[in-house]
Image 1 (cartoon, rainbow, N blue to C red):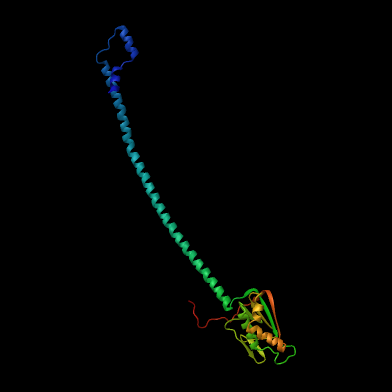
Image 2: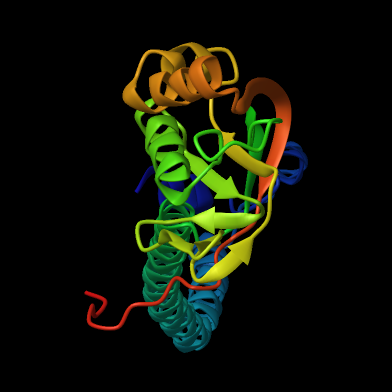
Length: 253
């Protein structure tokens, strides 16, 4: 209301009113009202144009807002899909790693079983035992299958991890027998001198062997009948795997 009052009262420029007053000119009645009306009409036109512009822009703004919301929802759905794929891939990778770990564990178990069964070759420190008949060729100084069996069992008792006689790996199924004047290992004849190699601690094996039945028996033959018998520690020995390790009744579980 103050603005309208000011527009009505100042419809004419102050300088013009001052000049008119000096000349004694009186403002015609209604002229101020006409000016006021003109100002109000112009203001109305401006307000109407602004309203029409706002009304025209409103649908476009609403559409843009809808498009933005739709894009956001689409992006969210895509993100959820990608996240689900990531989780599925993580599960697959976890399953593959578990399978690979199980395979490695099974492979390690098989390797240990092969070594224990004598199917795989082995190498490391150990001892070399040389045994031969006495030099005089007497019957009492002759090495027989029983002597080698005593020696091999003594090496096992002393802590040997693997044993071979003249290159033949000794396993739980190995037989050492006499065949006439020859000795056989797994039904293969061997000749003297007899070389018995054992894998194990090269520092403790000789002493432990000397204190059990196998070592004492060989020392008895050496001292009383001249049998040649020596135990030599070795920093490196190699034993072959046996090709006679088979399972005829057992089944894997």
